[in-house]
Image (tube, rainbow, N blue to C red):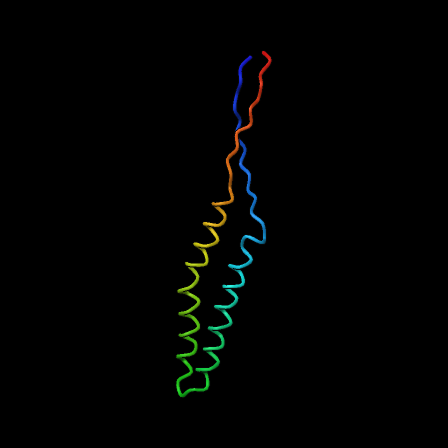
Length: 86
């Protein structure tokens, strides 16, 4: 009898793991839109568009990093022992 090990990849990521990250991203979007609307009434509304775009572009890499690290922390490599009766 020979014992062989097979490996399986399991991901136990749930919505609760990323819920706070989604809420934080929505908060960033709402704050940047509020700042944009506040600046829209000024004499130079282009600053509003640049400000909103800058906030979204600069915060996107941090959001992607948070998602990817959360995903990688929830991937597990488990060994399954298989008994061969040859």
